[in-house]
Image (cartoon, rainbow, N blue to C red; front, side, top):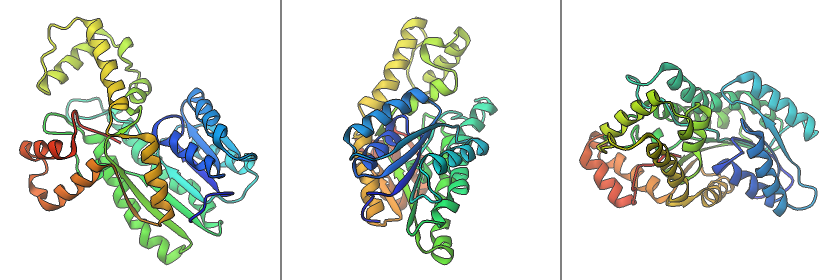
Length: 323
């Protein structure tokens, strides 16, 4: 699919980050876009930004939906069919994600399963719900977002990262298996697996909001748990006042977005170029390329401290990364 003009694309998590930038770039190419997100306000902003640069007549629609709930994605599908007056779509970007439930041992089960639900079931349900519409198109492309954490289950030796990594490994395996499945049973539908490194998105901010843990609203008990976690990472914050700790957490979340080595807009360009080239494997960011090579070269060392130190130096990671 070399040209997106006149095509119909579905984007989950279109309210911020890479989802927003995919919406913007697709619309600028004259592609009609249907997005979903849990935030109507964020989607309204994405829509306005997209239409500002889109050719006249380009349709950009929004639907509030939680991708972890199949019924909500079914309602989103029905809205796409209705609002775009179509029986098919050409592109599906299963992009939505959050990051919590880092420790299988220490963190609450509901946090773990909420993260796994969005990051894995969001992709699975999105594929289940929209694949029939891709099959009805003359040409289609399914694009699932995994992560470098889909082949390296870590953020470094001082940070637990189980729920997100488990989900992204599942997305990787599922999507790779679909490549041959589609070749055999639906050859007009292509499949791509996206594996970003540290991209400038609001995933940290959005996760805190979705999980009810925005820094300014953290209770004294939650702050105590946060202090313990930061201490385990090697930083002493025991004497930092609560209000200052809340501010530091907010600054860190913003820094993840604003100081990333690659912007969400540049990441969207890499992804869409990969789709045009029909590449099934799309690494996004120099850190993703470096880490992919290093894990393949020395897999037995991937979770050791020296490995992470070599990687961080080679890739320029200052505080870890997550797509």
